[in-house]
Length: 155
Image 1 (tube, rainbow, N blue to C red):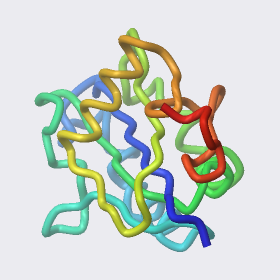
Image 2: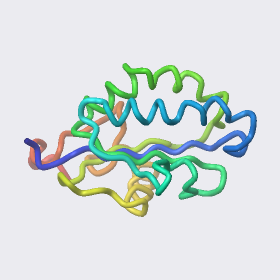
Image 3: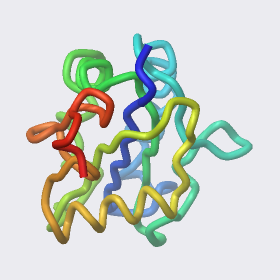
Image 4: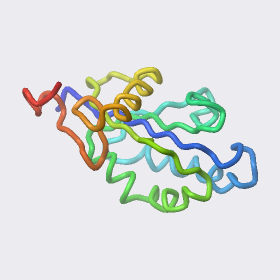
């Protein structure tokens, strides 16, 4: 077993308020998509409030939704994001979310059993936006091995 797991943050800027008619299909699919993630191989944890949801948390501002989770590895997260029922929701994202400049998703390695904080996730996204992909904050397109496997390449 690895001493590291993969943390991920993604943010999106809503076209309208979560309660608006524009967002109805997105909101109506949240429980199903979250359950799909919760049951996916390699899923460890996701940020949620007392209502079992994180969508009401305005961590990046009033118009933003956030997803913060931990997975066993990049493959587990990638399989869920791009090869499960999650894909149908991703294909419709332009109905609900506005285009954003800069990175909206960041991946990074955390020690096993560490649950990332929102402050940590924000810092990782900012690091990626400023410095580009690196072993400490990266993307699906340019991912890095966990520190224990990367050896001296990790900084």
